[in-house]
Image (cartoon, rainbow, N blue to C red; front, side):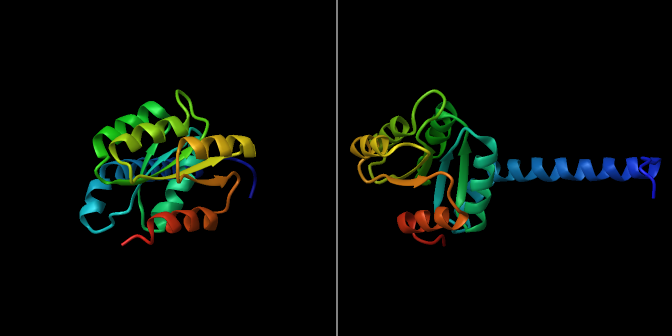
Length: 166
């Protein structure tokens, strides 16, 4: 077989590209729209994931969803606040990067805990020990997961705080 790109190969490529785009768009849209439906179906452990790096946000959301959690995603503080205002009744935990565009993860956690003092908080960061101590003082009871972390470490940290999903 030569390196030529035939008409037949172009058609297959177009179909493949279309299916990939459709699958990605559908999964993202479904994750957003169906969070309420999943709640009703008994999967009540809902997490707001706040991560500015898209690839980490998508990967961590997929890991948590496969483990049975409902995951709402935000790329920054502004989007997190919009989601919180809309869905705070079902959000039991936030997982936030310490350093985010707009505001820090700890600032967001303090704000959200004003309306839900029982909110569980897990911070992810590549930060120094001193930053962790300062954050623990600001957000009592917060847990930490140092980047990079494994899928198992993420799931174990969430299970410790929320328990297994229903």
